[in-house]
Image 1: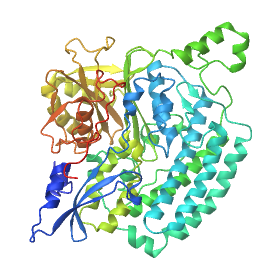
Image 2 (image 1 turned 90 degrees about the horizontal axis):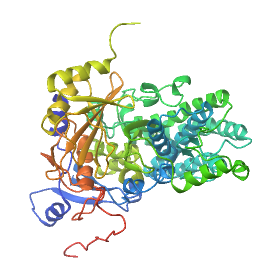
Image 3 (image 1 turned 60 degrees about the vertical axis):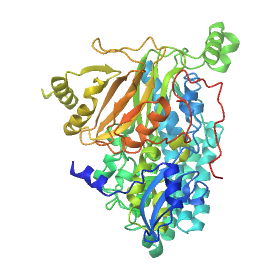
Image 4 (image 1 turned 90 degrees about the vertical axis):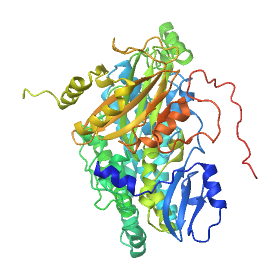
Length: 418
Length: 171
């Protein structure tokens, strides 16, 4: 257990309640050079409402504690009141930068309990949309990461590229965010006419823009100074703390659920897992930048291999009948009415499904008691676990680097607090 | 075709032998049902078996759930502690469900084995009122300090949400 002892002995986590911290802050001891200060939750670089209590000695961070819960809206409790069909409207609001992934993991859990097989096309549509979403989420990361480290222009560029993808999402799902597109039984609607050209256009624009990002950031000495060797974490530490996604991969450990435990049709497409070497802030940045390129490869293959067929299960107990059928068939009307009033019943049981979201392992633990609403729905949020690495990454670093480290974890607070 | 059983069986066999833990299968996923006393030791043993990442830890309230299926030897209790373990070296998963009685909702912490479980245990403690013995920082994580009640318990009604935000003393 040496690796654990190392984590413990480092004394990087400030384990202190609010009142204790306040008390400590009010006591003035001229010999004690440490002080406790508070960062956030309104600080612009804390990605929403993350608050960090820091113990400083001069400008060096000794111990710290992420204080979360400011966005807690009880979504897991809400989920117990919504039917399985309404579920995605709720979970999609958790990780607002990559909403499709939460919908996906929830839908996979419901489908596992229902034991239904999905048509191929719905699987591939899900994969296409998720990879596009991974790109938009990483672009958002590049934008905010650039902004946090002083490359303010990057914010505009990242946002611009992300907008291209969101425009496509709006065309497909009707909304730029919180799509409620992936639902138990398939997806909400088929891809619209001309979707190939739209996706093709995104694939044409992006490579050149990514090259520009390389010029603006990757190769630039100031950028490297600010990110290289900052916020280092090792593989053992990341695993012990339950970190996944780019945080874990930055340490050189090639763990990606798409490859390790393939879901959807990831075993049928080619892509590389991007890993870092040093586990520092620069690696985490570079991984995300290059994962956009890998996602583009997957999207290209989706364009090629997209099968024809139904976009959702043809089981009328799970998915509503087409609108046109309702006018002619009494049975279709009944099914439609049942699904949208009572919802469909899911056999009792419990299941855990996980997908690789842009931030790491996004899991859903679902318990059904045989009714139309879940008995328990729990989302395993990657940002929630990844945030625990923060004190260890910041320990011994400068306060100014703390901003870079927080940014490199890329936490989405909606998902952390749920 | 090799004759060797899949790796997941090895671990569960060892566990079965050593701890006499009931093993069930839920939609193709292996679930272990240890007693509260053997839970901590089991987690420690499973680390040696390769399950070295505690990927998720959450609670569940089974009040009014008559459809729950448990092995014969397990006495059903109101609360359950659900731990999802991951083996990142040979990709496989394992789930552990511990019965926690309502009258004495105390479980030994596993944050000494998996430091990553610390925040998750704090969340479970917030939401279900399950206490984790030996936890290094048993403060609320998602709820404000001094919040009364445990929101994810089934008898915590959604309709009567009181606003409990209080002024900080001395301000």
